[in-house]
Length: 189
Image (cartoon, rainbow, N blue to C red; front, side):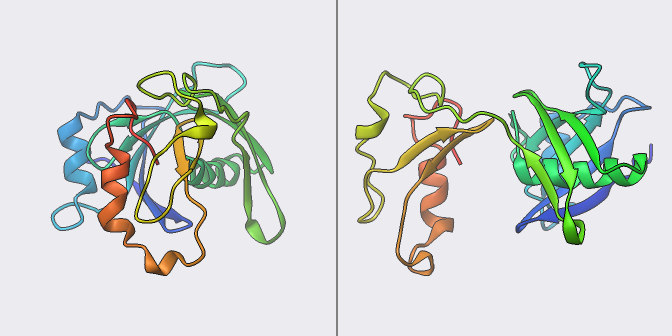
């Protein structure tokens, strides 16, 4: 069976986008891992599957799969790519995308820039979520010499460290350790 796809990127995140709105497509964790593999597959950060929307206001529902096959609730950069494709297809300057997290309003701006309203940000320990009840303003999470991160959920959990020089930090080394820390039951960006 042949499955058509589009490969796009947004702010250095790259995506393989598959349209399953007309013909339902089932992707297993193993399928996603094979597609995302940068040596033997198409290579991408995430595989995005478009489906028929569950909400009548939306034009599509998107399933978002990480390269390891796990599913996540939202991705702003992927949503911008999908919004661009939808607006081009529908010949419109606005669209609505449904994710597991919420409905996203998207529009096209000057110079074909795509804007997506990712909705409300959440800051409570159980909304991020964290493994246990912790005062998020006092999280003692040290990475190198950087402590006191900001924690937020914008459709999926994020941890933010404010640094003076990002080039001095080996993100490829410390990123996976932070992402899979047991404090974050749903992992964290």
